Length: 497
Image (cartoon, rainbow, N blue to C red; front, side):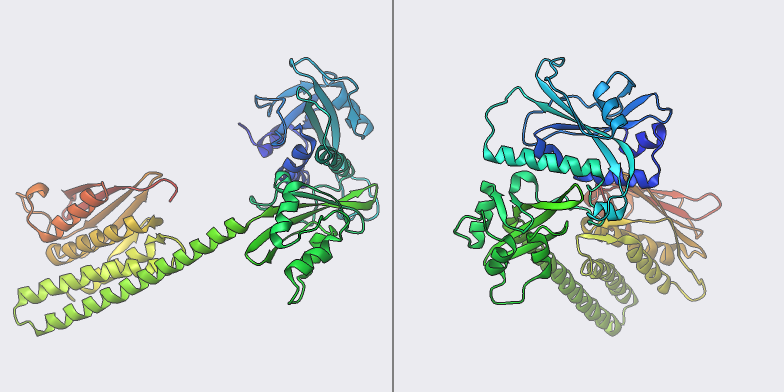
């Protein structure tokens, strides 16, 4: 499905500022849909003025939808939707008198012009004529119509005020930070305030949230800012954001905590006809969400500490092996212990990186560069090998990084010690689902009778076990054209890393 930006750029005359306003509106118009119990469709005039194109759509979570199929991308000619044409021409909200039965269910239509006003108008300052960008079609399914409750009447009145703000260019709020995905929604809890910040209506969910904060009396008639401050800041300085949000004076979000309960508040000032008539405050109990977030933070810190301690223990083991190697007089034994030191060191590098990572993912390029440098250090002075990397490994999970670091260490070490190359390259190619690594040298090359399956080299056995057995990858060894050897690893990587 094409995006709002795609459709606007291809079919309309909206400029960059217009498109930004539209994105802000669409990012927050679920609020209007839920308060209206209605579907919303955003129509923008075509560039040639011949009609309208639907660039965005929203269904309500509080009532039945009218449009089960997507209408984004639909084009209608001028004259086909008289109500849209009238609202656009007269720059006012237009409502249909009788329900439309063409879809088989009764639907009440309303068209709201969308204006982009300047900052002063959006904030409730002096009225400044703005630029009209399109219209919102609000379609209400009346098939389940019944006598509305007080909650529904409050929702509908609030939706009417919000629609008027859209038509006047006062919503969305130009100075408001983008709302978070987990911001409070209409169904989480709603309070309606008057101009003085007193509660005129509290939904059952909003009352429940305040009871958990410690408020036993009803909220209606109470000044929300003072009530919330007494519940949450009785023994400490009052959070200034709280008073601004709880009084509905500015479009902001804040969180309050009392005892073990944490409640998120979001204020939506209602500015109609140039003056503030009150506000909506959306409320959500985020106690469990924040508790889980804290548990995850504690878990992450514990995992990082474990990686740090494992790294320290591995470095201790490497130091002990190094000391033992120095005491050995048998060259083969000393060489075997030095190889073990390098193997342990490559694992320690991964754990050191993981100890600084907020998640179990690491940027493997840094690890690879340190492993490559370590291989260059063990080469004999006369060969002067300086290994180089081409391409990027990118971010890899720790479960892949550890065996890959060990395999890379073995391959580089084998190439330096047995191939005696003058040039050693690590070539990396990463796709969406697999990682290819080639270790190429210009050394002595492979023996004529070399067979990977029957090779007895401990290094190659380790690499095969790690790549094929642990990483479910493929391993290939082949001679290079012109001399030398190329070892290729192809490793599947988890999607999204």
